[in-house]
Image (cartoon, rainbow, N blue to C red; front, side):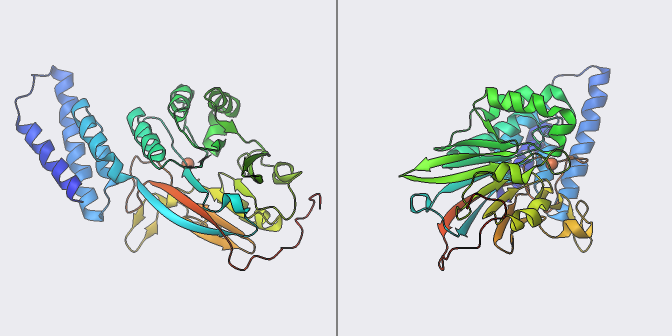
Length: 331
Ligand SMILES: [Fe+2]
């Protein structure tokens, strides 16, 4: 909060400094941007949000510099220890960093994506999971966002699944651009990571509203194997529990995005979306982590719901015992 207050005072200092005289249209735009900034600033103070302030500073080049300076503070890196049944010994302590719902576009500019990627790389993770919605409405942002994500680094690899917005914009195009940057896109299939003589399957499915096929993604994985599943939509949890997936990583909900005092969140209010909307939960043998994500939709704001990079530390389960076989698996 201190960093944000300092930023505001710096903005005011810059406002008082002599400015080049803008032309007529430029002056009106500048005036509008100024009022808009003040409005968002006041709103954010009212509701205790700080992410909205990032956008208040995103309007002009001068503000972009300030926005960049405070951005790291605006993405919350959340740390979680997750105990997984049958986790192979070599993967005890495996660290997964999740980036979800980037929504690169007008609401989340290039440098903001870059900041999120830098923050993720600084954690030096073993695995990076990208859980969909890389873009929102426009194809124009596919290659730029893929290019930035191509700079992500993780010991065992960077894996991605597609979200509903990616399908709307062009699933093939998004998948191709990510693959071109060395990111493994899991479309109803799994991959195996290997370490110290042990293996850990990482499965991924297409978006639930489009062509998700969980049995196909899990085909060939041993029934007693710990499995991580990437699914953009957390509503896969019931099916994942049926197939005894160990851990699901999801996004899609943006954590509600705008959480008003007393009224609750504006997004994700339907009963089936109230649960599994944000954070850790479990259903039967399956644990899930739902990230609040990075970007926004509909409105370029977050209120009391900051952007999030989950940093998950996998640990063996204390009372490990063999679970019943996964339906349809090999053994
Ligand atoms: Fe999204």
